[in-house]
Length: 514
Image (cartoon, rainbow, N blue to C red):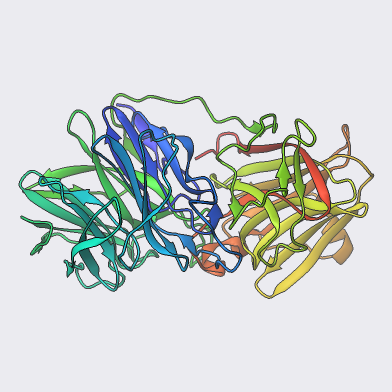
C-alpha cells in the first residue's frame, strides 16, 4: 500500500478549508498580513497539491493598510462549491469584518467582496435543503445566522450554538449535512499545544446539538508526538465514499519548550465513522495514502523572472505598491525599488515566499548597483535576519525584538554577486571560521538547542568561493519567540534605491525535503 508524508502542504499554510468537485479537490488557507491573500490549491488525490493562485489577488478585493499588525489581516477562510459556483468566506480582522467572494472557476476571476453583517472570525457557509444559506462563526462562542449571500444581510438570528467542551477559544466552526444529521465541527483549546477538534450533531442547523461522547475527537495535547497543535479541521469525502480530514498542526523542534519556525502547516489524516460519529487520528508523519495517487512534477527550484508578472507563490507584507517592482524594466530580472528605509517598520519593498521545509538553501543573484538590498528571513518587523549588500560590503543584520545588530560584514567588489542562506535543523554545517567569528573572536549562535541554524554566505563573483559570514540560531525566528500566527517568509528586499535580481532559488536539502 502506498503512503504519504505529512504535512501535505508545508510551511505557513494554516486554517485549511477544502471541498471536492467531481474528482478534483480545492483547498484554501489563511494569509494574515500578506498580499495577495488566501492561497488556493488544487489536487486530484488530497496528497499532492499545486498552487492555482490566490483568491484575493487585486487591491480592490484586499486592502491592508500600513498599520495592519503582524498576524492581522485575513483570518481563516471557508471554501465551498454550491450551485455551480465556488464560494470563499473569510474575515479581514481590524479592516472591515467578514466578507465572501465567488467564482465560476477556481482559477478566477473571483468577485469583488460582499460584506456580511456578522461579527467575529472564522466564518463558515452552508446551505440547507430549502436553499437557505447559513453562516456559523466564532464570537465569544459559536453562533449562527441565516444570511442572504448576494447582499450579506442577516435574515435570521444570530443564534447561539454548541460551543465545545469548555476548552478556551471555541472557533473554526464548519457545518455539514450528513445523512439525517447536521454536524458541527469546531476547534477549541487555542491554536497552541492545547489545540483540539470537537464535534456535535443535531437534526437542524439551529440545534440543539448533542456532543460526541469521545470529544475531543482529535488532540495531541500533552503528548510527545512530533506533530503538535492539531486543530482547525475540515472534512471531505472521496468519490469512493472515504472520509478525510485536513487540519493545521506544527512541527516544533529543539530543546524544551521546542520551537516551530515554519508556522502552522496543512496536514491530512483519515476518518472513519463509528456509531454515527467520526473517529480520527492520531495524525502520523506517514499514513497509508488515498487511492489512486496523482503525483505532480516537482516545483521548479529557480524563478528566472522571465514573465511580465510574479508567480502566485510570491507575497509581500500588506501591499505591493505600483512602481516598487518590475520584471520588464530589465527583462529577465526582478527590479525592486525601495519604498521604505528599513525592514523594522511597515512600508518597505519585500517580495518573498514561505519557507516550506525544515532544511533548505535559499539563494539569489543580485546586482545591487548603488542600492541597499538583499535577502531576508522574516517573521515580522521585529524578528528577521538579513543578508544585505550596500556600499561595497555584504553584512548580516539580526533584528530580535528591540535589539538590532550587524553581526558580520565582508567587503565585496562592484557588480553582481550571489547571496545564500542555508537552513539546517542541526549542526551539519562545515566547521569553518566565519567572518563574524574573525571579528569577535567568539563563535556566534548556539547550535545544539535551537530548532535550526541559519548560515549566511556570499559568492562575490562568477568563480568565487563562498564566504560564510555568520551562523545564527533559528529559535529567534520562531513563533514561540516572536508570537503570532504566521511562519517564516524568505525573500528579496530593497531599502535604498533600485536593485535587480536575476534569479531566486529555493532548494529543499537533498534527502531532507520532508
